[in-house]
Image 1 (cartoon, rainbow, N blue to C red):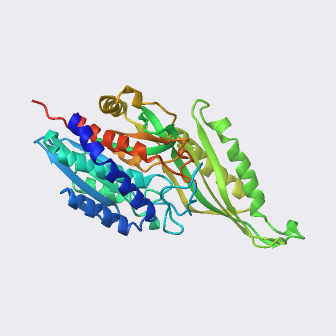
Image 2: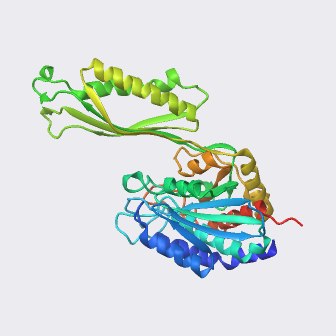
Length: 402
């Protein structure tokens, strides 16, 4: 334990330095060329072997002993297409993106930095391992990059094609609502699944002076939207939460011309897969019948369901024990679920695993803005706890027995 904490303390300054570098030079999903090169260089310096999965990311390996057991630790690396504000909630930020139109406003820079230092610690302590640790650096978590072809799917396919066995998987996500340095990994649904849609409704255009001669697709959409708003009340189990929104509607260019086409897109989110499936069935049924009733037609650009992220109970308990063992019982603090979606759900669907939240809220330092906010910032003092619990979990799961 003393050696572990000493290694963690010795690498804390480097951990913060890595996070600041990645934050300064963010890259969008599918375009992480320099970020990948940076990760490769760090792994080489630590003597950690790795392979690069095309469009997926990097898989690095640390092993010890003779056991075939394998623990996967995952971090994401891509940034968001948002201009960053140079101030957080109370002061000027320590580090700001130097790339216009791109910024790490979801904490992926911190995730990557923590996993790199976790790997460095595990490499030094590999004589304590009886099994294999896979460090998974995932590309394009924010939407899958160009053509949605990057990130989690190539990684999982590579592991399946190469018959890589995963016994446990674990990831961290920063949480601006949780006190800095606290860690939560409750069992069950912790991040939402989503039902996403991009739809065109086609009617008949006309002049604004004679709406009777047109077939306005907006009329159809309004009835459709009203029907969907009642779906939760009529069709979803009242004990299961679901949210629904249509943030994007596009139609027409002029105030006196009725366009023949309306485009809309949005999502429904829930911690329960069954509720999302129910919503999808109602959505497609209502869309079919109402467009027909209004004499319109519809076409689909995209429609999909992403699974909610549900933590395995055994893994959640193991993470809690790891936190208490290395940092004390007071460092674990349960928190509510997050209704954002996470690609790590695909790992947990296949393997026994869990995602933990790492608190980064520090009112005095100005961190606590929501994820994806231009003034989002994280308390760097929390990062050592994240790197520590990642490494500690792997050590505990692969502990050598006499």
